Image (cartoon, rainbow over all chains, first blue to last red; front, side):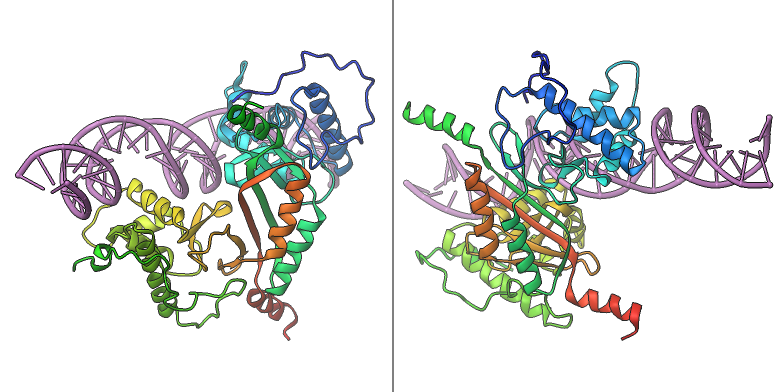
Amino acid sequence: MPIATSSVRRAVSRPKPSSAAPVKPGVFPDAKHDHGACVKSALQRAEDICTAKDVRLTQIRRQVFELVWQSHNPVGAYDVLEGLRDGQRKAQPPTVYRALDFLMEHGLIHRIESLNAYIGCAVPGDEHAGQFLICRDCGVAAELLDKRIDDAIGKGAKAAGFSIERPTVELEGTCAHCRRIKRGHKHRD
Amino acid sequence: MPIATSSVRRAVSRPKPSSAAPVKPGVFPDAKHDHGACVKSALQRAEDICTAKDVRLTQIRRQVFELVWQSHNPVGAYDVLEGLRDGQRKAQPPTVYRALDFLMEHGLIHRIESLNAYIGCAVPGDEHAGQFLICRDCGVAAELLDKRIDDAIGKGAKAAGFSIERPTVELEGTCAHCRRIKRGHKHRD
DNA sequence: GGACAAATGTTATATTGTAACGTCACCTGA
DNA sequence: TCAGGTGACGTTACAATATAACATTTGTCC
C-alpha cells in the first residue's frame, strides 16, 4: 500500500495557527497535498490538547501518533509496531496498543472497526464519534462530521428506546477520484 | 437423515413468504419470547431463499446458521466452532468461516465488525446492509432498517462524491430494558 | 461410470490483541 | 532527603480471530 509522500516539499508556508484543522472533514485529501504540513498541524494540535488536559504526550505516544498520521490510510497496529522498531528500539505489541488506547481516549485518533486499523482524527478536541468514508481502491479514509447522519441515527435509536454510547459508521466504497480512474479504463474518456 | 430440501430444484422464481419475519427490525426481542419459533421461522426462510437461489444449504451451513441464531446476541466464529464440535465432529476453523461466508453472501446473517461476531439477519431475502443497536449490558443486537439513516448516509456520501458499496452502522449503547434495570438500582423506583 | 465442480477435511500459519508482572523515572509529602 | 505511590514502559507469554494451501469427498451431469 503506497504511503503518501513524506514531505519532499518543504513547508514554506509560515507556521499556521495550531487551531487549523489538519484536514477538512468530509473531503478526500488531494493526491498531492502537502502532507508534511498535515502532520505538523495535527501534531501541534495534539500537543495543545494534551497540554490543556494535563496529560503527557510522551515520546512513544508522539511517535505512534506520527506513524498513524503518516498517510490518510488507516494503519494497522502491527504496521505501527514495525515503524516503532525502526532504529534501536525493539518494541512489543503492548507498547503500541497502550499508545493507541491513549490516543483514542483523548480523541486524537479513531479506530476503524471494519479494518482493525487506526487513523488520525481530523477534528481532535471536538468530542465526537467518527464517521468514515473508506475507499476500497486507494485505501484512503475521509472523516465525515455529518449532522444529518447523527440526527437520523439518534432518531432511529430513540424510536427503539435505545441510548447510544458509541456509534460506528464506516462507509466502504469508492472515492470520486478512483471512480474517475476506473471509468477512464472502461470508456477511455 | 437425507437433506431433502437441497434436492428440490424447482424453478420457483420467488420464495413465497413462508412465515412472518423471525424478528421485527427495530425492536429488541422480548426477554421471554418464543425463541424456538424464532429459529424455526428463520430456518424456514433460509431454506426458501436457498431453494429460490438454487444454492445448497448443506448440513454444516444449516448447523452454523442455527448456532448463529441460538440467541439474539452476536456470536463469535470460535463459539460457533465450539458448537459444531458437540458430538462426533472435529471441525476446524475454515469449516466455520466458509459457512459464515456463504451465509453472509446470501444475506442470511450479518457480521458485526465492532465485535468480530455474527448475527442472524432479521429480514433475509431483502437486499440491505445491516444497521445494529447493540446493548452493552445484555449483549443483544437488534437490527434496524431505518430509511432516514440510509438517506442521511447517502446524502453525506454524495456530497463527498463517494459511492457506497458496504455501509457499516453499529450503535453500541444500552437498550431500554437494561436502562430501566440500572435506573432501578440507582433510585429504587 | 467418468469428468468436473462444489463442498469439506486437514495442516499449518498469519494477524490482531491481552494478561500479568517487572522496572524505572518522577513526583510528593513527611 | 528519602519512602512510597503512580504512571509509563519493558518483557514474556499467550489468547482470539482469520486465512493459505492442498487433499479428499460429495454431488451433478452427461
